[in-house]
Every structure is written in C-alpha cells, then in structure tokens.
Image (cartoon, rainbow, N blue to C red; front, side):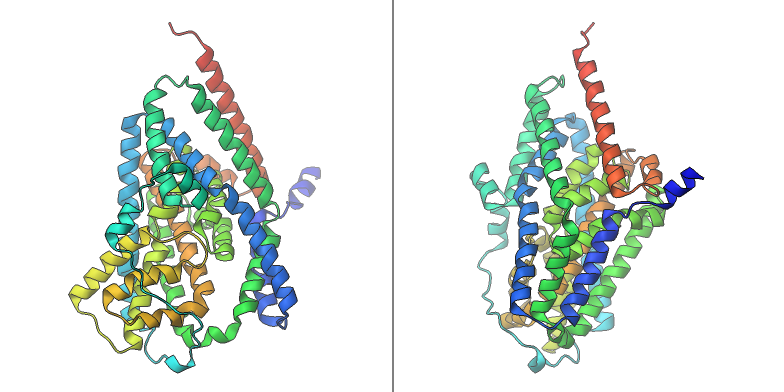
Length: 447
C-alpha cells in the first residue's frame, strides 16, 4: 500500500513544466492586453535566461568534443566520423527535397496579398560568397573564436585538439585528459543549475515575443506557416518511424525522449541553447552511447540543420509563387543543393533565418526585398526550424549509435517511469562508478 501511494505521487518532470510554460506564454502573449512595461520586463527575464545558457555553450561544445574524440582510438573516430557526415548530409538533402515536393503540392505562396504584409526591416544582399563561407569555418585564433561565440570555428579547433589528444593519450594516462573530463562535469553542473529556472525563462521568452509581434503579423502568411508546419510534422513523423524500425526503440519512447528538447527548441529558437538539454535526453532517455552522442550532438548544432534546409527551400518556393515566377527542373536541383549546403552555414542563434535567406534568395534570382516580408513571422518560423534541427540531431545520433551497437535499451525502458531529475541523478551515479573503475584500472601495474 505504501509503495502504491509513493508511486502515485510521482513528481512532475521538467519536460511537463516547460510545456506548461510554453502554453501559458502563448496564451499570455495572445490574450493579455499589450503593456510596454510588462513586455520589457518579460523580455529582460527571457534574455537573462538565454544569456545564462549561452555563456557556457562554447565551453560545453568544445569540452565534449575534445573529451569524446580524445578518448577514442583513431579507427573508432574514423568510423563514427564518416557515418556522422553521411547521415547529416543525407538527412538535410532529403529534408530539402521533401520541402520541394510539398511546397509545389500545397502552393503556400499563391493567393498571398503582398500589400497586407507590413515590412519594417530593410534587407541588404549578403556579400559573402560560398568560398568565403568555407574559409570562415577555419579560425585564425581559437581564443577569438570563443570570445566571438563562433561555434563552427570553435568546433574546428576542438576537433584538431581532440585528435591530437587521442594520439598523445594512447595509454589513457594523460593528466590533461582527466582534467578535461573533470572540467566538463563542472560545466554540465552549471547548466543543470540554470535549467532549474527554465520554465520561468521559457514563459518570459514566449510571452514577450508574441506580445511584441501580435497575431496580426501572422494572418497574411498563415498559409506559409501552415505548410511549413505540415512539412515539419510529416518529415519528423517519417523520420521517427524509420529510426524506430532501425533501432528497435518504440515510437512512444522516441517521442517521449524528444519531448523536453523539442519544448526548449520552440521556446528559445536556438539549437545551441537547446544543446545541453538535448545531450542529456539523448543519453538518458534514448539510450545513445556517450562515444556517439558527445561527438554528434555538438557537431549537429552546425553541421546538421534539417529544419534550416526546409526553411530556406519552402521560403524560396513561396517567394517565387508570390511573384508568379517559375523554376525549371535545373533550377530546382540547384536550389536543393544550395539550401542543403547553406544550412551548414546557418547561424545557431535566435533570428538567424533572415540572415540565411540573404545568402540563398539572390542566388535564385528572386527579389531581395521579398525577404523583409517574412521578418514579422521570424519568431514562429524559428520555432518550426529549430525543433526539426534539434530533433534531427537526436534521431541521427540514434542511427549512428545503432550502427556502432551502443544503444542501451535498458536506459530507454527506465526512462518510461523515472522523472528527469531522477534520470540525471542516476546518470551521475553511473558516471561516478565508471570514473572510479577507470581509476582503478589505470592504477593497476602493467604485467
């Protein structure tokens, strides 16, 4: 009887609180009369939460990449590396093709009254070429890349550092490697502390964003947003079904595992800010082994942007339909490749969609001023784009983990009954046990 009472009082998990905060924030922004003072207070609270998360992101990404790669043998790294790149590229390519098919079926740009759309943003063409973009991946100074918050450049340095560390740390006795592992524990603890106030930050972000823009900006582009949402839903549903079939993880378990990171993605509009939550849930709820998750999830922030590929593709099609312009088969092929490659250069901060469009719109011969038409709905577009970017990273990690035979189905099963806090505590205990065992093995004399 006592046990039954104990299980009936299951604590509400962080996922539920974040979802509640998202819903309440939307209702507040839509229903409560706009008040500049209240909106500014909410915006400030939301931005404080975002900055608290962002202050550790570069250190988290670099630390996890260095630890994951530095602890692997080169043959293991090579296998995971090429599988990662293949899955990332193919998923973004398929996402772009998927957007083309549904875009031409549902025609989101037809019947749109351009005069009804208010534009308050002036857009200039991006002067950055594809070659400049590739060159900008390489840092000239690792410290500057970190201070500028340039995740791609920081990743490149971390990859080289990790590879060099794996050569030097052949016998797993290097003190620097142990120091990096301890440093990563502290960074994860900092983020865990900040995440305790996530529901308040999420509510403030959603409420202030919707209150600032209002529902009136959505109405003229409602069809565009609706088609974007349909593409997202159908694509992620098919992706989940494929991953479930390959990994033998139940559809319900996958959806449950994606829940918290999806809510954070919707609330923040940033893959980078959602990364700490995504890494925890990929390991603790979806059973992905650390040697895969701690390489793929940080890399996926910049290299795997299914949502960005769909966003750019469907927006280009919408603009063409708005202005009664048509694309040839060759144009469509070029557009798919362009959007797939441009998604890699997609920024990982809120509001990056407009910047990305300045790269691809001129390349397709579309009017540059058309980009400004979408500025008012960027907050909603960011939600749709980011949720697919984040969920796509998690599903890609599951596929590679299955190929490496490092999916732990027992972790998936226990996630059905344990709360987020209980899973974190259990993961911390297991990590402590692993570290203790590793120390004992390292201390044993070689015979």
